Image (cartoon, rainbow over all chains, first blue to last red; front, top):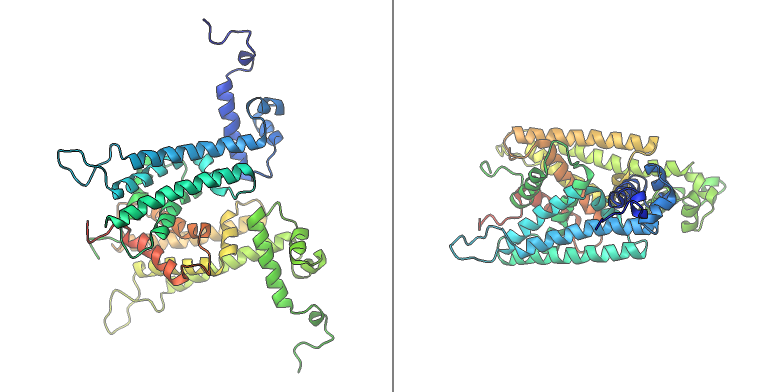
Length: 219
Length: 219
C-alpha cells in the first residue's frame, strides 16, 4: 500500500514534516531577533517565501508557534532531568561489584551536563524560553513547567548538600540559581559549530561549578 | 545668594533633579517589563501621571531615555573595573611590610565582587543593558562599550592564568564568559531588599566561581 499517493494533497505540498520544522525554526529565529510581539505570521511567511496560509497549514496561530517552540525546549530539559535523576549509566561513589544507587552529587553533576547538552541542541528554543515573562496563557504555562523543573533541581541540590558532597556555606536555593544561571548564560555566547564542542563546554561548566577556577595545586 | 529663586522656572517645576531620576527609573521599568520597542514616551508619561511635554523637558526623545539608562549601567561597570584593576585596598599575596602590587588573581576576584555590587545597585539599568542587541546607534555604542569591558576582564583572566593562580584546563576566553555569565545571571532572580544582602551575594558568587561547590573536606 502506497504511504503517500501522488494525488494526495499532502504530497502536493512537498514534505510536510520538513516544512513544519522549517517554519518553526524560522519563527523562533525571528522571535529571538526582533521579539515575539514585534513579529507577525506575515513576517514568518515572508522570511520563508511562503504565503500566510502555508504557515497556517502547520500552525493555527502565532501563539501555536510560540507554544511549539517552548514545548521543544521544555520537553528537552524535562527529559534531561529525568535521565539525571534516574541516574542510569552514572558512576557511583560506591564502586564495589554490586549495583549502588548514584549519589545525589552524581545525579546533580549529570543534571548540569545534560542541561548543557539540551541547550546546545535546542539553543534557539531555549533562548526563547528564557525570555518568556508570562504575558499570555501559553507563557504562563511555560513558566509553570520551568518552575517545576527548578523545584526538581533544587531538590537535587538540597540532597547533595545533605549528603555532605556540596559546601554548606551557601544556601541551597542560591546554589541552584547560580548553577543554572551559569548554564543558561551559555545562550548569550555559545554557538554550535564553533570552536568549542558540546561535550567540552559541558565539562567546562561542571569544572567551574563544582571544582572552581582557583588552581588547587597552588592555593 | 539664593540658589533657587522662587520665580525661576526650575522652581515652578518642583525638584527637577528628583523628577529626572524618577522619569528615568519609570522608563527603565517599562522598557524591561514590556520591551523598549513596545514602550512609547506617552506610556512613560501616563505611568507617572505626567504630560509627554513634562517628559520631554528632561529627555528630548525615547532614545535619550535609553541612552541615559545604558550610560548609568556602563559608567558603573567601568568604574568597578577601574577600581579592581587599580587594586587599591586589596589584600596582596605578599603580606610583608612593604607595599606590593596586587596579583592579577586579587584584581580579578575584586572585579567579580565589584561587578556584583554594581548589578545590585543598578539592577534595572544593567538588566536593560544585557538585553541590548544593537538595533540602533545608541545600542551599538553601548555594545561597543560592553565589548571594551569584556576585553579588560579577559585580560585580567589571562594574567591570572599566566600567574598560575587559575586552572589551565579551561580556555581563558571561556573562563571570562562563564564567570561574567554567572554574575549577569543575577539579574534573573536577585532582588535588592530581599533576604540576601549585596555583600553576601558577592561572596556567594566568588565562592562558586573560584572555589567551586564540591566540599573539599570530603573529596
